[in-house]
Amino acid sequence: MLPDKKGYFNGFGGRFVPETLIYALDELEKEYAKYRRDKKFNEEFGYYLREYAGRPTALFFAKNLSRYLGINKIYIKREDLLHTGAHKINNTLGQVLLAVRMKKPRLIAETGAGQHGVATATVAAMFGLKCDIYMGSEDIERQKLNVFRMKLLGARVIPVKSGTRTLKDAMTEALRDWVTNVRTTHYCLGTVAGPHPYPMMVRDFQSIIGREAKRQVLQKEKRLPDYLVACVGGGSNAMGLFYPFFNEKSVKFIGVEAAGLGLSSGKHSASLVAGSPGVLHGCKSDLLEDKFGQIRNTHSIAAGLDYPGVGPEHAYYKKIKRATYVAVNDREALEGFKLLSEKEGIIPALEPAHAIFYLKELSGRINKNSIVILCLSGRGDKDTYAVAKELKL
Ligand SMILES: *Cc1c(COP(=O)(O)O)cnc(C)c1O
Image 1 (cartoon, rainbow, N blue to C red):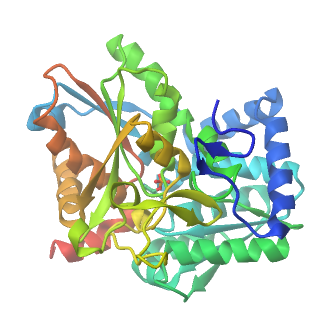
Image 2: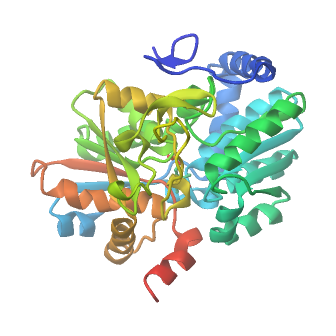
Image 3: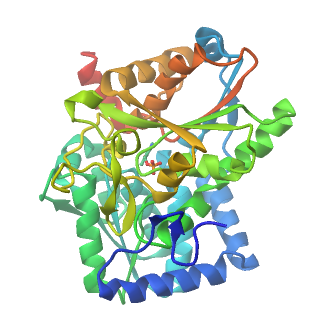
């Protein structure tokens, strides 16, 4: 079972961090190993997922969209209906329960679109922990609503003005903070990236998405789906959906990255489709770097996808061809955004709007009887202003 003891998924992953963090990562690994099969921990986690976050989420048959695209059945896994508006809360609830057990009075996190910042600030408020969120000043500008939400929840939002002032820079600063404050602080990392044990731990917390979807589709269709489709930023909602189907070889996985202004423009965030292996933020995975090995500037209309790296388990899935990765650009994502809003009355976040658009491409190529599950990772409230501007509403 992967990752191995050192945190590798067949060459990807590992732990590339300063010496001071090794102790904290060892501690986290040990505590997580202790609790991941602990009955009381899992009961408490299940309780909060159900009573606080709103699980299980619906697996909705999108009849209109299916008919419009000529796909037999598209089911939408409604992570957008969760408390705080995205799948991020699955992970932050798991991590805060660990932080409390490790007696850490303070949480820190990085955030791009602000969804992970909000989800972290939310659990910090409920469990009475101090909370500092690192956010690029560029993202602070384009995601104002989420900045206000974090402040209302009692968190401090620390603007990061280095680099491209986006998610990558926020993550660098959060890691720096953790090095200085490891004794009192738990770093609540927001996706399946970073040093071991984060990719494994976040995957496990998010795999509730796929476990529920599997149960629900078997109940509704009496068979497994043919395709799972999800957007990939760091890769946590996609991995959460894919992982429980890993051994079901008939189920194909498609991860949709952000092609931004187009792959040839260089202004995109497609680390799996257009990147190469390297080390970023403590782990080895596919990433976007220039010929000198410097991390490239990325772009996506969706702040949550605007990251030059990706979780190592995705790089592994790509290498062994368990999953296929594709890229959808800004303009197409806007089309996906409109499509779901108009056909199903569901306004998606811009991140999964990339995956929605991809269904259009998929429809021409698949078997007539196909069943597709799309992960709707979040709702569009945070993006309405930006989209209105783009569409000149
Ligand atoms: C954060 C976010 C993403 C991207 O993160 P992953 O780790 O790739 O899931 C996608 N969709 C939404 C709604 C998000 O908030």
